[in-house]
Length: 257
Image (cartoon, rainbow, N blue to C red):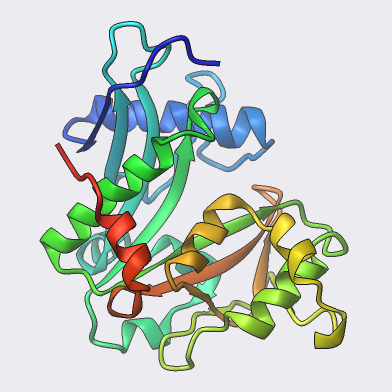
């Protein structure tokens, strides 16, 4: 539990040290807490890194209070078409076919590697990093936000309710929908509609995915099992023009500093 009132600042990474700090935070969250691994994870330097990091933009959330236990307490990785061109593809394309999104001729932005320091979860930290993201999206005039979001675990049994609920109620339109690649694809309609329990589905859905849904987000076709990260992933899509007005107002509060 924090013993001080956080003083948040949201900004874009400006130096290699900023990116390294984000990778260390990601290591603490994804590797130490959740058991993820990967080819470029550096266990000696305690950094969760991959081949996309050098080409991406990194949004950072800091607690600048003098008694903050950790200055960098949140991070988001962002990639637009220019970033993807330099990297060779979007990160999501390792798991999902993005042909529909790429052909939409809309300004698209991939969101990924979202994480918040354990000491700051359940408070205003995620809201503040989202408001900073909103300011960036508005400034750059991005229209479609998308990215991989994860259910922890690769056993589909406990995920039958949430995956089936998403398939039945939040499927993206075909003109935007990503499609899970065959190498790791699993069907999401694991239960008949009459067997879906909305309450049980929401309880089993991670907070980040529920936040996207509240804003009007939808999911692509199929889920993808990621054995490196020990997750089952969906690809979320959010058309900023279709956001619920009340949610939009909340989302836009605050901003970059």
